[in-house]
Structure formats: C-alpha cells, structure tokens
Length: 363
Ligand SMILES: Nc1nc2c(ncn2[C@@H]2O[C@H](COP(=O)(O)OP(=O)(O)OP(=O)(O)O)[C@@H](O)[C@H]2O)c(=O)[nH]1
Ligand SMILES: [Mg+2]
Picture 1 (cartoon, rainbow, N blue to C red):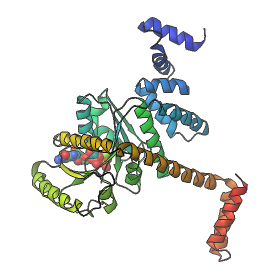
Picture 2: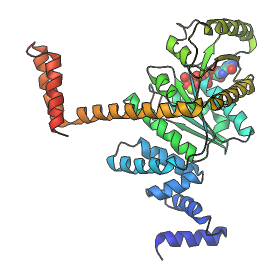
Picture 3: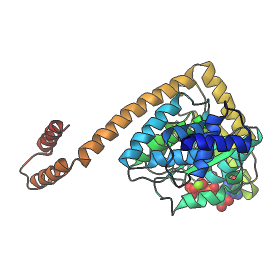
Picture 4: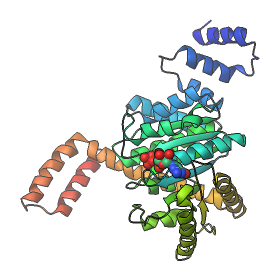
C-alpha cells in the first residue's frame, strides 16, 4: 500500500466515510497531515473544490510565487479550476484611505453570510506590503468576518509591478469561485492604476465617498466616478448625517452629466453607515437588481468575456515586457544604448529598433 492509500484507509477508518466522498476528504486529510510538505496540484485542486480554506490559501500562495517551478504548478492548478468554478458575483470596492472600505466589507460580508452566502475578500493594495501598511490594519478591521466560517479573507501581497498584483488577484478569484464562494469582494485603495485594474475584473464596482469633502480632497479622479455602478456615501451617521443627505442629492445631480453606461444601468447613490450597519441591505438589494438587469440583457456574461479578452492581451503585453527586460544580453545592451542616446550618438527610436531586433534573434 502506498502513502496515499494508507492515508485514505486511515481516514476512512477514522471518519467512516464512503469511497465516493474520499477523494476530496482524502486531499484535505493529506493537506492537514503534511502541512510542511508541498501538496500536489491534484491535492490542492481537490481541497479547493471541497471548499477547504487551507487548500485555498496554499493555492493562492502558489499563484503569488515567483518561483519558476511554482508558476508551472500554479498554471496547471488554475487551468484545472476553470471547469469547477461556481457562479459568483464579483464586487470591487474602492475609495480613499480611511473612507471605511474595510469596515464596509466587514458589515456587508457579515450580512451576506447571514443570508447564507459564502464570502471571499481579496485586498489589493499596491502601496503596502504584507508586513506593514494598511493591510495589517485591514485584518484588525475585519475582526468579526475573519472568524466567520463562511468567510475567507486574503490580503494580496504587494508586488513590484501592479500588473502582477492584478493578475494574482484575478487568479485568486478563480480559486475562490472553485471553492464555492458566492460573493467575491475586492478592496482596493484609490492609488495609481489599481482601481482601473480591479474594475476590469469585477461585475459591479462600488465607490465609497465621504460627505462634505470635495473630490480633490478625496483624491478621486473623474474616471473613477465614471467606472462606478454605485456611489456609497459612507459614515452617514451622527453629526455627519445631514451633510451626507446633501451629498446624496448633489451626487445624483452630478451623475446626470456622465455618459450613459453600455450596460444600460443607471448608477445609484446610497447613504450608508458601515459602523452602524445602515444602508447595507439597500446596497445589497441594489447589487442584486443590477445582476438581474445585467443577466436579462445578456450583459453579465458579455462583460466577463470582454474582461477575459482584456486580460489575455494585458498578460501578453506584460509577459513580452518581462521577457525583454529580464534578458541579460538585452539588459547589457540597453545600458550601452542609453549611453549612446545620452551622448547624442543615437536616436531613441533607432536604439529601440536595434534592441527589439536583437531580442527577436534571442527568442
Ligand atoms: N462614523 C463612522 N466611522 C466609520 C464608518 N466606517 C468606518 N469608519 C471608521 O473610519 C476609520 C477607517 O476605516 P477603514 O474601514 O479602515 O477604512 P479603509 O477605507 O479600509 O482604510 P484603508 O484600508 O487604510 O484605505 C476607522 O476608524 C473606522 O472605524 C462609518 O460608517 N461611520
Ligand atoms: Mg482598508
């Protein structure tokens, strides 16, 4: 009897479970038993399909790894997950630091689990690393959700390249859907390109705002408002409530000046207090209305397809760049060409052409 069969037999004996159930259960058993060992792709896949959070976490760690062997494994895992994905709603949540994104996710996530849903939270933060910055704060602000058995919270490690972070997040979504999470919430802080990337991987995009502060103060770019399917005015509580009500009227008026969405959906403004659990149900009803609307129009699936095409092209672009800049010969020659340009001995275009031709000979 090999080790796998031994594990299977031990588990069967311990749990008294049938042969049919054994594959996934066995995988989880193996994962728990061999915590130090690297699980095989099959074990990870079976664990993820069974909704095991340890397997899901390890799967995400694998896709975030820069190790070449891990990348091969990660690609196989993602490929195998595709056909096992369950339907989900992907929601992006953005807003300036401190607007209350994490608190909002904590309240909305808890509400959704009370409706019987499984909720996964992924945080994209290009400005912080796992050990410092707001991500650690996020963990503490999702105190209740973190302990909820129907919730899974995963901060994304900040990579050097934003493209990397986004790609990992998108792949993490696939793993969460395979694990049976109905709602995927993606938190991103309004910095750099992160909202644009998150917008292109979600079905519904929520912008959290504060009343009484101008757009400039809130660091909100016009493009972000255009991307939003709903604007949530958070912290509509206590002394802030009156200002929040005024802001709602103003936003509703302002939204008329934005071009109509291709989905045919009219963005809505909702008052919310994440802290006092107000407006959370209204927000969810709104999202559900959107999903119904988008499904009826065939837009829901169409948008996901368009996003897939976008990510294919994006990935090619990123990988071509990576391959080019990681090539040692190119790196050396690039230095020389930069010096030639600085000395006015070569034009940037001629240098680019030279380097691209050189690269062509090396692939
Ligand atoms: N009064 C009030 N305070 C809130 C509300 N939501 C969040 N806060 C407070 O605002 C502060 C920031 O909340 P977070 O949820 O961490 O904000 P965030 O947008 O996730 O912040 P970053 O992750 O740093 O970008 C905390 O002190 C929260 O308690 C709310 O609805 N009302
Ligand atoms: Mg946060």
